[in-house]
Length: 509
Ligand SMILES: Nc1nc2c(c(=O)[nH]1)N[C@H]1C(S)=C(S)[C@@H](COP(=O)(O)O)O[C@H]1N2
Ligand SMILES: [Mo]
Image (cartoon, rainbow, N blue to C red; front, side, top):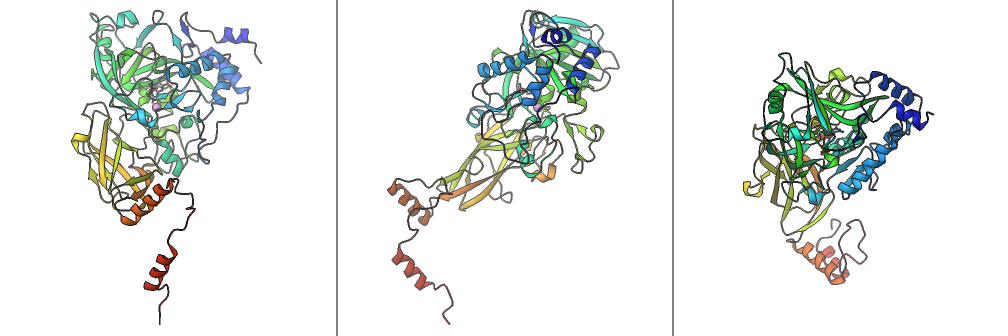
């Protein structure tokens, strides 16, 4: 066991005013030292939650393993700061995993409006939260640019140097709705699965910043001809298979040419970027999986090919259904970039009992990436045979890079268990696969199949149902939960006998 003074010397903070930032990528020998320590330790296995149900606690899962990774390298303070930041900035989330922190938006704030409150915007972290002073911060732009530069936040915010824009962007984690894949067919037990998301790993904010395109042009004199990908490096520490990294991903230079699609942002919904969302600076990449929108962005590295960082090269890959633990290789998955069209029913919720008068109201979200917008949302009350389209008046307005929230009232005659599902058509006429099975994949990404919920329909417009409900009301009792047996006789004995004699239970001859 190394002493803490020794660990501080091995893995020092890189710069004053940048707490929780250890530079790994520039120091191969430091990575080796960390690997040695990690390899000589045993860690608590990650919790099993695919073959058994998720706990009903909050935090739902406890990240012992990742905390221990930090502890053995003398970085426990990063774990503690991350949780302090959760309590300060995100106290009321569904804390899916306490460390690295993954927080899902509770259902009511998820649909509160087309812009998600910063307090409730989902969070996906692969490591701890760095604590960086704005005044000490600088962004390094390097690699295949004509002039490498370092820019302070003051430089970036100087409107005479770079034009500023605000863009409304929906960020969706590519693991959103992963729980549906898990429940039917478990998948990768590796790092990706730190986030068994439901429908709340999506959120929308208005970001202010500068288009990366303008910064590369005005500050760096443009890109070298062989430039193909722009790598974003975040100040957090990422652990994978006994190696430490700074978070790194990349997007094609082609994407960066769209000025409003790749921005360097410091403001979220009119407020400074919360620490949880990347203060003081993050990339916001519209239309692609959330993973590219690098938080605590301190280095931009222009490359001739995609980033070799594990998050880019070994994760967020899409495999065919015959790929799994028995044969999976990084090279046989394709890299997920643009998000496909997808949607979710948020109210009612799975297994809700809905008492209604012949129509059920539903609400949810619909999103499509790659610059497409949700064009039409359709809801089926019978598992996908009959579809009702949401009225355009009942959808929030279109933006190039955001979701649309929707509401619809669907006629329902049937009683008992029924299955609702939703599908969205986007502006390129794409729609969603019908069943989870149609698009299941080993890393459990991009669950874009029709979202399905089973609800229990109690139709008050039916006389027998109305009478039963009236009886419950008269007794001051509730019909829910439906699993609790009725304590009183289901039928008046005289009435029952009359009916039985009218329709004998056996043939009479
Ligand atoms: N530096 C850094 N940036 C990151 C991540 C991370 O772990 N570290 N997670 C990514 C992933 S997978 C997603 S989905 C989005 C989520 O952004 P949010 O936490 O602001 O909602 O951040 C991305 N940017
Ligand atoms: Mo993500």
